[in-house]
Amino acid sequence: MDIREIREMADEKLLDQLEDLKESLFNLRFQKAFGQLEDPNAIPRARRDVARVKMVIRERKGQKEGNNG
Image (tube, rainbow, N blue to C red; front, side):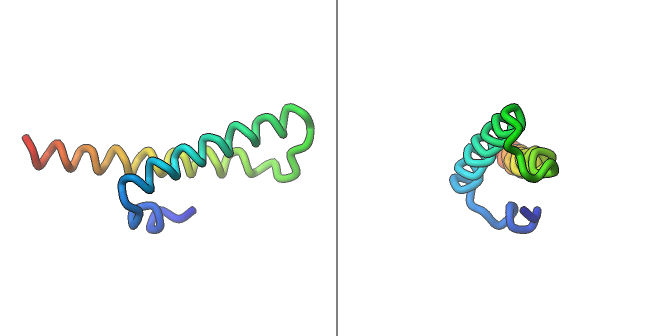
């Protein structure tokens, strides 16, 4: 997932995407534990996507607090 795509999303969509990514990461970890993981790079990619979404959420939260304070 590209950072530009993430920044274009609405706040509600970002939160939904974060939940989906966390669930996906959880499932990937189970696949790894059972030896069924086909792509070993999938877990680091999923972790980076989660981090990107969290970063954008934090940026927006900081902007909103900055405008209110």
